[in-house]
Length: 71
Image (cartoon, rainbow, N blue to C red):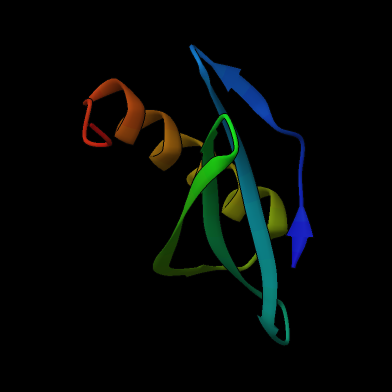
């Protein structure tokens, strides 16, 4: 699992997690941490490029936070 750069969003830390799942295929997940607790969300779409998977994971993490679905 490849861990990219984390981003601070309010009191949360959003970290995209990317994993190679085949020849030129990447799966995306995101860790959303607050304090010592974190939640990891895995996503179904697969991507042809790790940077696309990273962008998707970050966008989904931000969306979860901004829509207040973690409360």
